[in-house]
Length: 383
Image 1 (tube, rainbow, N blue to C red):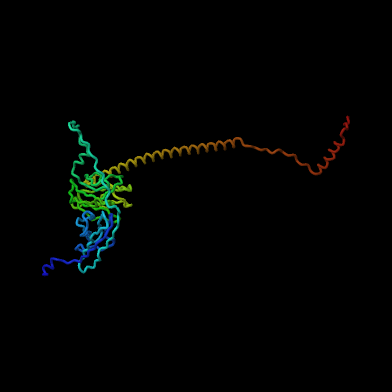
Image 2 (spheres, helix red, strand yellow):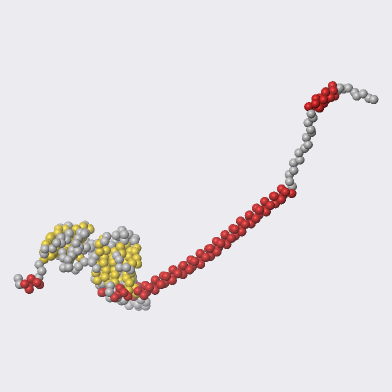
């Protein structure tokens, strides 16, 4: 081989494996904690059909259209309708590289061979021929449907559903999860101005997908657990993107406008989401309006507090006056009692007691008393 040919062609180390799977739905993903790829994007893994796979028996869905999984943080969904069946795992590495080959893990998500059936669309009644068509005004919902679809999703038991930005995709509280979605704005911004990711697990996000492309799976009965949407370029300076989401466990989050993943703490499947593109001046007006409302609320609260303080002061003054009157009344009662005591004093005069005779007098008196007693019945002499 010539030197020019050697410069145009780089040899790689390629190893292939055949993985046998039974009937069901499987997820092939990178194990955690792997080294980042080199500037050449290697090592990497590609999942593809085996050469002897029966047509339609095995279905492979990856975030890249060609089955490329890269070297880390990626996954592939494989549905085997009739097992056992094989898929081909091809690993690409640079020659003499120090990178280890990517480590893969396989999880069986379901043992069912087919996705859940999608209910048929209800038939629209047709008016009989010859009947006069009643005049009908176009309802807002019908006008919205007449617009170009800007957002689409594959929803459990419903299939593909389309709508416009600013309206809910999916039904909050429906318990029907979303398997994938795509966004293609038709006004305000272009599809190139937006990108998004799907939440696949705790700290596990799909690669960024540009506007107009599908992100997730379709018909694989595998829900996404949230989403992350952000603007880029000049659109990010003029507009903001707000995301509100509802999950099957009843969790509601948002609106979130910082481009962070919107997911439930319980990692419940996503059942509905709302994406809004708003001008930044509208956001500032909304913030100013919010500040004005807060200011008015603060003024109302201050006025209310002032009224309550005045009422409280009046009550305190009234109670103080009542206490003062009670104290004055008590003092008057005490003064009256003291005056009564001074005007009508209670005097106790000691009765004079007879003097006690001396012992000689007592002795002299005793015979005289005895004489009167001894002369009882005796008449006094008359002179």
